[in-house]
Length: 295
View (spheres, helix red, strand yellow):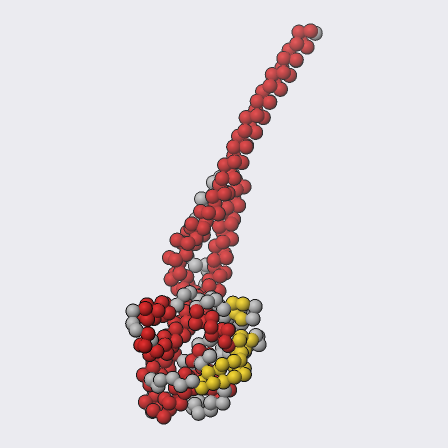
């Protein structure tokens, strides 16, 4: 595992708030020569957490990196060489990553193999989340399929860098989505309660359930919602109705079918009851009339 890889990993165990960066427990460290590309270093630098890289490098005995980096340093070849070495040439061959909050260990070789394949790394000893198949991998696989094998080498380092960048963007997106979902959770739950009450009311009255998600929205966000939450709700709202309405249709279908069955049973019981009442009344009337005649 390179320190470039380490810099883009975060622990996604449920309820963990301080999952970055992983602590490194290195058992075997190697140095592997990688072609020096200063343009790549300048390109990747803004996407790195420098303090995390500095701490990781120090942990592995690479203490040449400065605490802070200026724009002028990105033009200094001596600094870029040290940056290149720490970021791309230092390999943790064997060891583990440790979640800073929970202390859970992730075997580095196992994780890196999974991340390269785009698999879900959610096993009994690791939980970093599920990501969709890599677009970068598909693109580079397509490129390799029609160029000679001797030209594959130059693509590998750029592919790895782009793959890790893609994974980081995906994770950032998923984290933002989860945060927004938590903000909107009370509002969605309140609307769910309103829909549940409407369904219960229809069921009790014996009427078909016709409630929709739009009915639960009322005239706008609930009273007391912050301006930022209201703005987020306004953005997300158009995406919710197309999803929620088919869901509610599926919920209402068995309920309405059951209501129709109950309605038929009630009608049947009413007809039978009316018939029995008529026959009983007729028999009583005949018996009463006969007794009067006998008297």
